[in-house]
Length: 324
Image 1: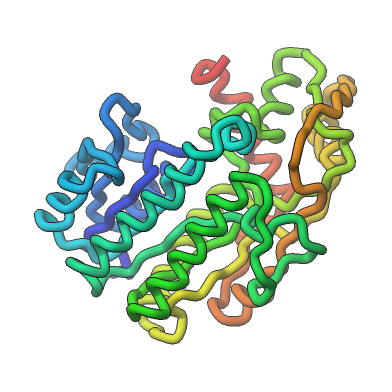
Image 2: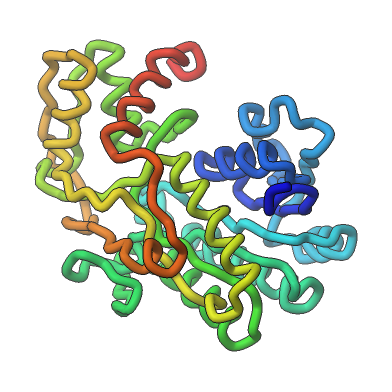
């Protein structure tokens, strides 16, 4: 019997990219899933397919105090994965208050319910490598968070709230800071990997909003889901991990231009990217040091970056009917 067999788990942001994969892995490992999502949001069909008996979708909002309180009164959760936030960096720049509300207010509301009603629950809060801001790389967990962009501020504040509730109130809370996710079922085509693949499949040159020299770190989404589950499992048995953050990534440091050229080469495409240089206020260089996760949690990815990229390309080729 695995760790998740028979456990009841709440997932916020389950309709998102990472959320869908975490839900899928939880269900495959025997968990009973409760997905909290706003009215009108599409259900995570790919994640829930085949698991109707153990997957419950509850309509509601983290910002609706009454419905959130009722949810925690009605069910006892063994674990909570908090993934809901604004994911579009450019949208956060256009509407900073919305970005702050989506990450900070939701996190505070959720952690209060845990503190007041279910302090036994293991809680994983998905922060971001963006929380580190534009400081020199590689990012390590013992470095201070130095956000500037509204998205960075939103994620860093969410991160600090989780640390506080874990350390101050002794709750079983862990924080993940991951590289840029990529993989199947990512329909956010403002992200560079799915965008480049989709452009190549259409026979159109990808346009880069930066000068192509920004560097990024990445994590294949199935590895990211496994990392979140692993942190929850370790946290359940080790109180010293409460309030701690962990980096997860493949540890690559690719320029955007080199990444796009590499994807096109793997796809056998002769297209060349177009440099637009329109990006504003974005961090230029990002890379995560994952030594802490490897040393403390025993984590390591099962697939390397290129293997994940090949799987991702194959997925988009096989599923063009879902997004084209």
